[in-house]
Image 1 (cartoon, rainbow, N blue to C red):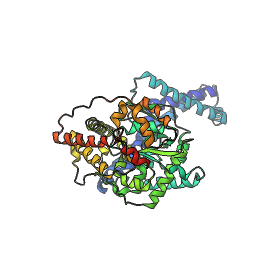
Image 2: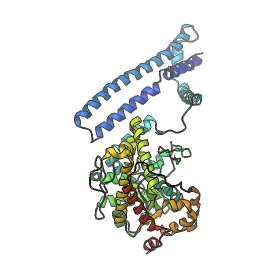
Image 3: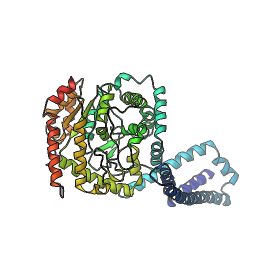
Image 4: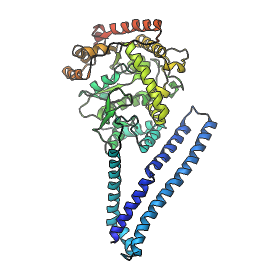
Length: 496
């Protein structure tokens, strides 16, 4: 009878925790803690504002701790009441019940039962309510706290990466850092689909979600995270563009490395482009080791590939650092791309207002393209009116400035790919792309044709400046004339 009473007490304990929503209270404590930490490390907030925000967070934390302690006390009292009631009815003695409760069989059994009960109630709760299939920020409070911890110190990420290099030196082969492929362009130009297609080829290895949030130590953290993260589940990414991602999906995390070594390029409201002669020997050594480590995460791979939109601000430097690299720049019709850029900015502005962690996440991985995290690359040194980002002309001007800079700085290892032509005739252009990036098995790229769909007609841009639109069309035409499939000169200059 004492065992039955103890398990009834366990049920009462779990029931009180569920009824009083202990999980939500604990999650609120974690959220408040990580928000306070993000305020402390945010250099954009004045000291007096930091003090006021941290003080409010401290008061909120104190209330949360009192509330969680009260819930715990209530749960213990409910459990004790049941056990004590059985003893009062002389079904067993309190001493016997305590002896059973402190024995290893009951401790192990009750722990397993409590976990299964809690998970079962969670599953029952999820199936009894309508759940939105699209989760914009699919991170638990513990996940958010881990990401905030990782993002708070680039120096810690570098030290962990250096430790990893020493621990895994036998798996790191320097030759796999040769002939890398860098995919770059303004966002919404087709860089993601290009990365997904090429990263799935046997030759290439890319950073994946498995390496988050300690992306500068992909072997160390990637191996550890596989033990507790599901690899098969996929969900639509926050962009709402139909692209589904999972833990093994390739993604753009390379910018975290540039931020760690070049913090002076990242101002509060813009990013400064790099010059070809910029040099940091520690960065160059770390980057080469990092590429080799990424390749080592995929069995059979021999080359590094990445997608990094911000690399259009450093084309000359990349070509100097990696003269054997190929830099692939997809080009998309400015009407379609500008509309998509504006739509994504408004989408993420709304998301960042509702979910502060979404902004911290984007800033932590160096994605400053949209929403409250927007920091345009200063292709044009004149100041940018950030309040105009909700209007089409802002993105048209940015598009023109970006691709004028690309044309001016692209060297012999940079090739343009007409994204619209590639989507329309993938079978025609993919073999040329395979030649450009020097694939060993050029027939393997034919499988990529399945992921492309013919583009819709370019939309009209309401309220767009006619002069800006004309300039963008002329520039787009020049970019396409230099793209593979339009001119064989770009292939010849890469193969030389």
